Length: 478
Image 1 (cartoon, one colour):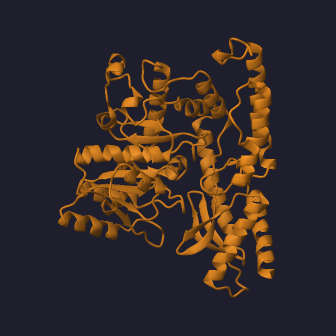
Image 2 (cartoon, one colour; image 1 turned 120 degrees about the vertical axis):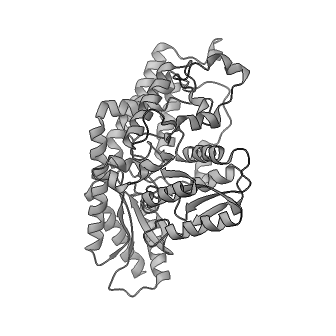
């Protein structure tokens, strides 16, 4: 062993060799991923057999370690950017942002405070301003912060709302959200110490939108009982169905009742770029805060969420702490320290990937991609409606569609239909040909497609439907 090994360094030649090897593998992945199965299957026993071992004391060749990772780790992970990855919210990232992440990590840029990297802080200000403009938030007073994802953005919003509306005492505070709201909101509420009885899950209507009447009734009842309604969380693109809550009406209720109006647009907020985006998301500019996730429909790699607020001072008033070891790096008011605007002190340089990809492709390309996604979901709906075998449960909304196999020539009961569609999903997943899982809507097991990958074609969808029908015929004949 070399006496200098404790420095954890490779030679310049070794670094180049390893770097070229890694980039070559990434490029090859981008070029060929559509030919690979998108689904990886493996039990804990399988994975333990492959990876479980004691940490080695002696060094290994770096190229061998990298090749092992490519062969064993990457091949045993779902390809969420695959054209037939339809489930959850796919991650169709782009190569320019991958390079940006490589640079941010390679240069190990600290993006917490201005003094550590003025350029990193400035690019976060610039890209946040791009998003503020998209959502018609105040240019001078508005602000925001990039987070690890929508979960942290929603938590940051709730902390901020509680601080501004409730101060130090939130013992009687009540928060309102729909039964279709993303689970990250409930998790954040519980992390922050709210009790179950302080949470109101408002039922949704037949279109899965928050019921305005039931919300008004809940607020009135809580007020009469001496509680403190302080926040409404609306959804702009629910994960299940892509539904947008009635934002204009909700904003009016919040204004009348002096409630904080937060919109969770982690999924659907990017639809603001669509041709009719402003109409689809009418009222989103009335929010006090908005969550959007660039690592979803803005086509960025994980991790990148974002919280936007109407007044950046709300974040600073909520999160600023000045210990002795930071007193010399506070700077002036224009030099933002983003550790004062959120939970994290140590922060990676997330803004770079959004900045580089938008500069490279132009915003027009992002607009076209989102228009394409919305259109292809509508085309998929048309295919289902023309078939005697399929039933649309929730129509194409912000590139999400829910459907189930329900042939009109078979008299199947609801439990039989539920079991059939669950089995179809299981067989598709076991085949590895597509990532297609179920959800529950109106007490029915349904199949769900989230079509935000601009590389997904209508032929990909047709092939997946044909595969589902093949498995359905096999199941029904058993």
